[in-house]
Length: 109
Image: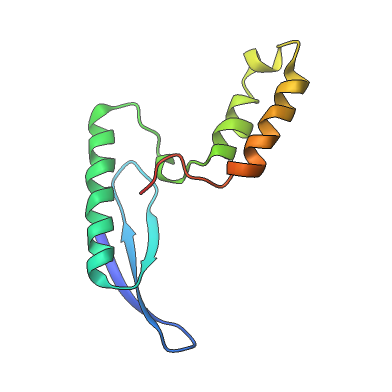
């Protein structure tokens, strides 16, 4: 379910903040210049998250996953990966990806 709220900045610009809440996932918030853009985004994200939930096996933090979160925090923390002989070199390779794409979300909503 999406909710919307108008916000006024200190310079007088008005924006619309959309909150999307789907059971099983963390809420996602995004700001838009108009309510029509916010509604379009929110409806699309709701559809996508509900479809993921029906498929099963989806993660609660799915909308907020980033390249850094998946690659560094989870991939390198895997015990099998930690046991590799070339783990130190692998960490160096991963840092390049994090420096270039670390904040990029895995799901574009």
